[in-house]
Image (cartoon, rainbow over all chains, first blue to last red; front, side):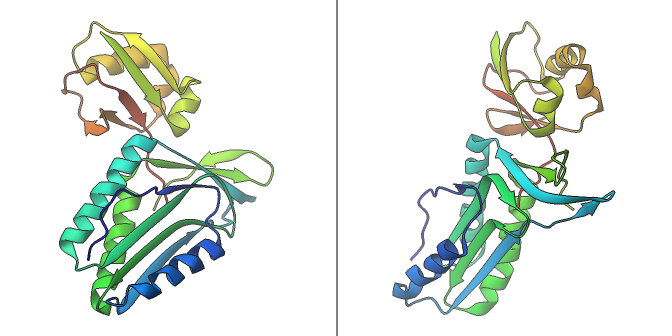
Length: 147
Length: 77
């Protein structure tokens, strides 16, 4: 069983641990799954020239981003034997220590989910037009660059 | 040809606007860029990609009248 219908990827603000826990819980009915793998992106309190990042404010070209997320899903289902996959990304303000990206892949067997998760996360970082503005504690900002 | 141009992230900061419509006689993305560089000199220092109808395009691509977006480096996740 695949899970290919379009998803609402963007969430307003941080992704809560309750939401993540509930997502895991919902998969208990899908008993062909033998392995899940989860990536959680967390906002880091980087210190840059003596100033500490307090939050990241995310914006996106939403229409293109949703198309890209969809393409990544389709490619991942073609490349890997996945039972299902879910991607959630924050928009708006996410404070340091909070979760801004949640990727969840499931398969009958474990090896697939390790490879699939890395492929998906790297594709999101490279191909999806999302922009992070790092807000410092003194309310100045700089634009985040993915390394 | 009336074209909608969308600006994102630090590009929107440089142009001080998120979206505008320009009536352009020009034919290519490169021609459009020449117009934008003269309108917003701050853009010349910025790194960005250009999408037309949500697909990344090069300078030689012809304008179709569909939406254009100026996209700074992606930094999701």
